[in-house]
Image 1: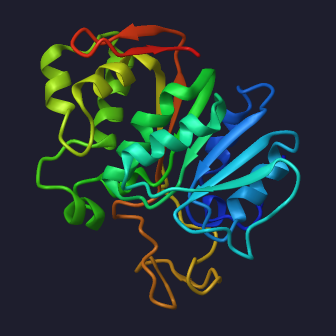
Image 2 (image 1 turned 90 degrees about the vertical axis):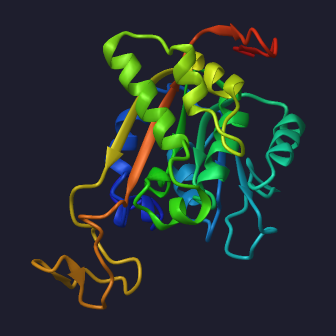
Length: 266
């Protein structure tokens, strides 16, 4: 596995997520099916192909296939707007499969993160993992939170922090917590209950180091005191930036008492 420079992906040089992912990917065993939301310039798809050469990889984006995107056996692309939760559901139904690994690296808008998590996590196989990247955009201090969430709106960050707390303390989610974490446009109570039952483990990483190079100018000409690149880009040491989360699928089945919706391994 090439962890030093995964196809020039910002997962490595800016966010520095790759060592964190290395540890978790090592638990997966054989990987045959991968889904990634957000293709951008295709760097992450190239990286996944290097890491998992035998896997079927589906890249999902709001854009049609771009000339820069990698092509080859086992790589396919689908188009979806993450703003539409029903469209995500239809896409997943059409794909008709479980996934060993899902990476959500799309728009980073908090409601879109919630839509993808609620619709896709039930399709992660037992022992598989779901990565929710750029979780910092759901932080109340981030501009995306202010733009897309009313003050006090619960989202993926709140839900995952609380599930991690429950796992660490050996508790289960109380009905009052379920209602508190549900919110129109984010999660229903059934979503909260189901995800709390299915997610076996949560690990959250936040970069507390300098990036390896700047995403804007490509250099590492950093001011070590001001913590900015000489080109003017903030290196985001003290702000809400570069947070990611890895969620493990639990072996369980769960039926929501109100909706009768079944959550179980497929």
